Image 1 (cartoon, rainbow, N blue to C red):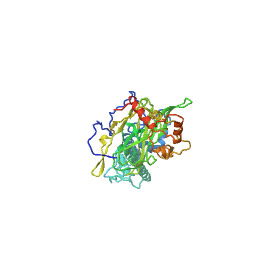
Image 2: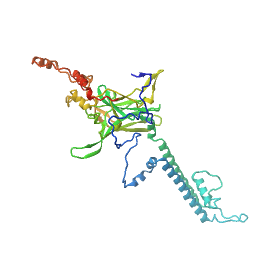
Image 3: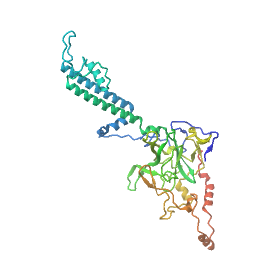
Image 4: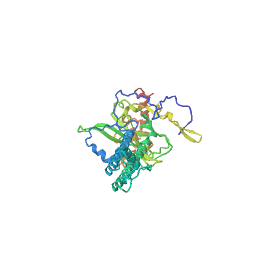
Length: 443
């Protein structure tokens, strides 16, 4: 349900480019600055060194030109034009010198032979004629005559070369201005992610929003965990990528980004965050990468927006505040509270420890039971297995509830003099009340 318009929450906020609170500290934040693969603005934080085959970049000149920064691109284009003008100016001057057009003539004497190019008396005039030919200005004072066939050939070559340089320059400028990452500038992610209970399960969440009214068509979201792992053979894998399933009732990674959304991932068995607790979060060597892909509605160009969350940027026991209200028959979004969070009551234990306390044992899913989500789409072109089971008897049961004992088993225990087993829901509540001292509510 959407909240009606009301007073603003007293939580202070600090509005940045990402439009969220950057001053909310993590209780278990460490002082050391960790390296990350993806920066908050989506650029790759990887330095490529000792590349010996530099010539590979010249084999794809167009992509190299597009990837260059603007000042380098403009410098290269300006140098290309100046070099071509100077080169052909030298050719026109040599042609005029060889034909004798540069020799001084008496204006009152007999007219000399027809020159190859009229009104070329020095290198300066040859340079001006070169500019007029390549950019097709044509002031009319200088022109090529039929006296020299070589001059006609040089004129054709310079025109073709000038068209090629212009085409490459216009193509690079267009591609640089219409790059897909430009559209990502108006897609904002919350600076901090949170872990809070949702539907009785610990859930990893972050907020995503689009500042433009134009839509992102076929938008898909993908989460990956990058962490350092060590195999049983002792091999160290510095970059181990693991997919994270995004919670979506449509059983896919597609989203409809008409308003800011809270993207969530339920932490359960099989999740890379299953053994992460509030105390171990600060020591985790991992990075959660978020990748949003889609097609820009106005241009039809495929775009991609990226960001990442390190353990210092994950807040335990907090949830995002509501930023959408209903006003005068339409919905309104308050981006000043985009990254604001509020504390919630949540234990500091990991999902695995909570499952063990509630009595959820390993392998409690019967063998051969079908998975409700089966193979779900992971981004573009990939599939993976995940999701909850299709057992209807346990679908509506809380996560901490155990399987009820059958009636004949209960009667048999009572006949043998054994005490009747108390339902696990009551035990769970009792444990939760008695262990409040060990649980840390994040303020």
